[in-house]
Structures are given as structure tokens and as C-alpha cells.
Image (cartoon, rainbow, N blue to C red; front, side, top):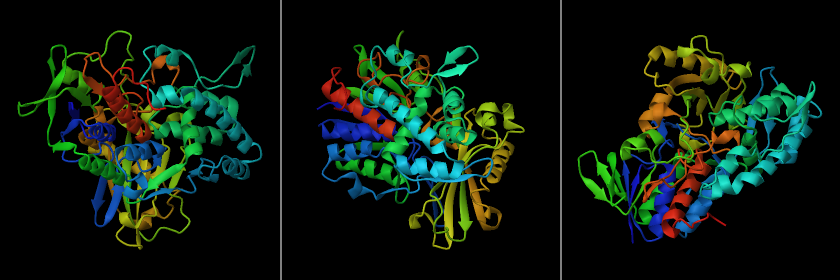
Length: 501
């Protein structure tokens, strides 16, 4: 039985802790805050409840696997998991609306044809076929296996089979999501639909590689799910599974250093000066903090560099009077009138004159998140800069006004219904998670010279491992859950571990 020290109690760290405890190891989790879950948090006030992190759960099979492997109770026995239908409603700049059914390619094709005109559904359906090919080519190396030592193969090869595009005397293939929208979808609204999946992960569609096509495919193929009571309930269930399997949690325990002995990680040093010895250390922290904990770069030449994320999320929590209309969509995306002027990517410093952003509105039909049926809770969010300037009250006010204006097509009676609102900025996310300025880590993506890959779960310091959204395979609930499985496999089985089969 090995002693394992885990730094942080984010979802990836929890997933690793539960699996390692079941394998017979003694696991102690040191979390600097007073709770678990990382970015998966909840805000409560006056009987209203809100998810301040992820509000939906894609690819629940990752978490089903965790619960099967760590105990007799399946995931559905621990949380109430339901499919969201329609998967989303989209409101485009020209006023067009379309509701997309959940996990139904044929249904989506029909809905797009009816809303956007004949041929739109076929073009989207053909795109999904190509996106599936990209998914099939990258699923194992980017989700189910430790990062390949020759990761450059993933960096150089574009897995998305782009359609040849003739322009003047040249034939080109789309290399970014924006080019896919312009050259293959050939409709501003379809292009906006595609780009909304990138924005949801904090990615700039102008630079996100064509391989990001796997993001809409993942949702269309495996569906969109909601956890009754909010996604925070998933974090609670994983935490309780850890406790049931003997994982020890020490909250308010800030790790200030990784202890080395005989050339390998041998424990962690805490803020009070004490040392917790360990045979392995699992770090669920961002690259900047990990470097400060070790006092040196955790990687060598030829390893995937840790590219800093520059975007976070600005979120408004809305307490509304009046009940939710019976057929309201759980998720509505209100698209920006100018796709090229998303504030996080195009606004000048200070966001003066920032254009209206694309916003996502979550309106769960969940009695647990409202005081009674005469009220409703809603969450509105948009991509925002992670630049450390969110203590500026005037900036927060400007962003609040931007989102309240942008959300009106989804909530036209907002002014009459709004009881109060609370802003949750990237600055709040930084306090909760420790991520640089509240930045959001995107899922790992192939191509683009490796700029969208993440550092391996192993480091050049034997016994020190990385877990969570800042390591392979990147951010998002499915990916952090899989990172926990990969780290557990590497510790239990050793370097020969090759992932799930």
C-alpha cells in the first residue's frame, strides 16, 4: 500500500483519489479552500440555487465508469441524471430561432432545414459525418490513453477531413473552425452554431483548429445531460464516494512545496511548515503553481509546453419572479450580431466599447434551484478575458450591462421579472480554483503544432503526477474525469499503462 498525497480537490483529483483508494492505497487530499469540486461550485441565496461552474454534463459515460470501478452503486443511484431535450435553442442575429433535439442527427437535420432553409440541415449533417471521422481518429490518444511520447504526431496531423475549397487558382482545406464555417457550411447562422461550441470552451474560433469539430460531434452523438439539483451534485457524489472508500480530506490545507528525496517526489510541504510524506504526489493545479511548488520546470525539452489560457467566463446569476414557462428550453444560445467582435478576443484593453457577446442562458426546470414555482433561477454566461483586472467595479458593471442586453431575446420580460442578480467573474473563479486569473482550460485538440495539447500526466520528477484540466487530456468534465483514470492507471500499473480498453 502506497501513501499518496493529492494537491487540490477538483473533479480530476477526486476521480484519481477514488480509483487509487479502491486499488488499496492510502490517499490524503490537501485542499487549500474549505470545500471540494474545484470550479464545480454552487451559489445559494433566498431559496435560489445556481451552478457557478459547468451547468450541463456531456459524455456521462466517463463518470459512470468511475462509479462502476469504485463501488457497487452506479452513478444513477447517487445522482438524478436526465437528458436535456431539446439539447439547445439558438437565437441568431437575424432573429431566426431553432431548437435542436438531443442526440438525434436526423432530428437536427430536419430542424435546421425547417428553420434555416432547405439544404442547411444536409450541410450540417455532412459536417457531422466528417467530425465523426476526426473523433474516431483522436478519441483514444486524446481521451483514453496517456499522452504519447511522440506527441508531435498528434500536433502535425490534422484529423478533420476537410473538403477541398477552390479559391482563385489555389485549392485549400479548412484549418480552423472559422474556415469550416465559411467554406463548408456556407451560412452565417450555421457558422455561428459551429463556433458556439468553441466559445463554450473558451476557444477563439479564428484560431481553434479544424479538429475542434469533435466538440459539436461529442454533444450530438452522446447527448446533453443535467444533474438534478445542479452539477454540483455530481461533485458531491464523487466526494462521498471518495470518503466511503477511505480517502482522507484535509481542507484549509495549503501546499507550499513538493518534497524531493533521492531524486523523486517524497511528499508535500504545508503552509504551517509541516511535511506530509508520500510515495507519490498527484497535483491538480495549473502549470504556474506546479512550477512554484517544485522550484523548477516539471518538464524537459521535447515535452508539450504548457500554453497559458487567456479566457475565462463572466457569469450572471439571475433571480426571477414568475414561474418558468412550460416549454422553455433548458439552454438557449443567443448569438452575437458580430461574430468577429467577441469581447474576450477583440475588445481593446479595459473592454471600452466592447461588442455584445454570444451568451448562453441556462434555465433548468429544477425545483431544487428555486424557492417555489412562482420563481425561477437562470444563469447567463459569456467568454471573458482572464487578465486579472476583475476587481474594477466599473468593468464588472459594463460586462453586467452587456450580458443583460444580450440575453433579452431569450428573456424578453427580464426587466419586469428580475429580482436581483449576482456577477461571478473570472476573478471569483481564480479565488475558488487557483487558476491563473480564473482562466478556463479547453479540452486537448490535435493539430495546430500542438498548441492545443496539454502536458502529460507524468512529469520528469519521478513520483509526481498531474491531474485535472491543466494536464492531458484537458478541461471539461469528461476530460478531467478521464485524467483521473489515467493518473490512477499510471500509478497502479506503472509506465506500461496504456489506458482503458
